[in-house]
Amino acid sequence: MTIAILDGGTRPNGNTKILTNHAIQGINAEIIYLKDYQIHPIIDMRHAPEGFQDRNDDYNSIIDRILPHEILIFSTPIYWYSMSGIMKNFIDRWSQTLRDPNYPDFKRKMAAKKAFVIAVGGDDPTIKGLPMIQQFKYIFDFIGMDFAGYILGSGNKPEDIYEDIEALFKAEQLQKKLN
Image (cartoon, rainbow, N blue to C red; front, side):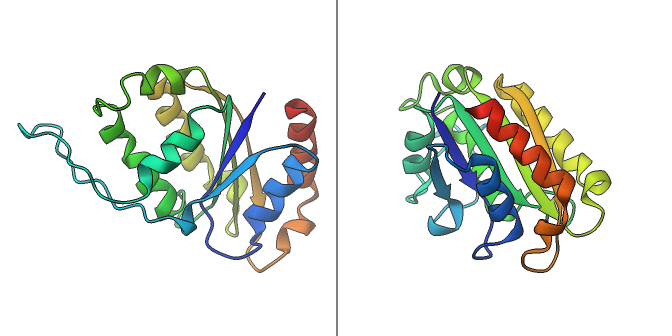
């Protein structure tokens, strides 16, 4: 199975990246750092006669990279009890892709994938991160993807994640599942 990781972090070697790397250690995966791309926010044109317009950014190139993969891992720090802004921008744009004639099978192709979420936050994330997990569940349900699991880790300052033995263990369990 092929794996793509959508990394929504902005901190170099942040806690979420560390935990995600722990989960995929020794596994071949394509990592897409969303911070390295220009992804404009959606302009909602669902009901406009002319429909959605091209945003002239890097969004479609990311879609082209993830579509061939069977597993997607959404890796994001928990910011204000939700996913990072760049991750949200990326997912918001799916509304546009669902109506894009260049991607007529987008929903069908996405529905064939398994999705995992790895997220780290500093304010009791195993409880306060659950609304974000619920949000991902609704997103995956809408698109038809199999939500295969998630890991919520605790870390605020750089490298705090190494103290979250439970999250590291869960990452090792996910690694076994992905092999």
